[in-house]
Image (cartoon, rainbow, N blue to C red; front, side, top):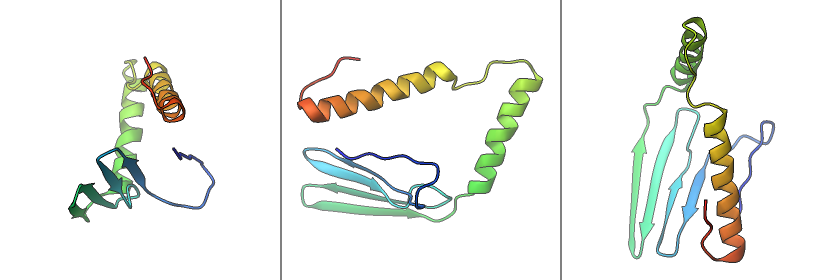
Length: 104
């Protein structure tokens, strides 16, 4: 299993999930672009969607956060949500190493 994450690495934009019977790939996956590739057995599908508004997406994130702060309301997802994401990523690495199930 290979995974990487960086704030200052060479700009790339992809997500690939490979299973025992097929593969799902988004390449590019971010920055306002998305192409979905699906493969299963002898079947392959490519889906393109070329109208994404990355700048608007970020503006909406900032607006949401500012609104929650000004209204003194809870922000979601919160730190607990991020911690659960990390637990899941660690479990993915562990199951890839042990080739067995991992309980969360």
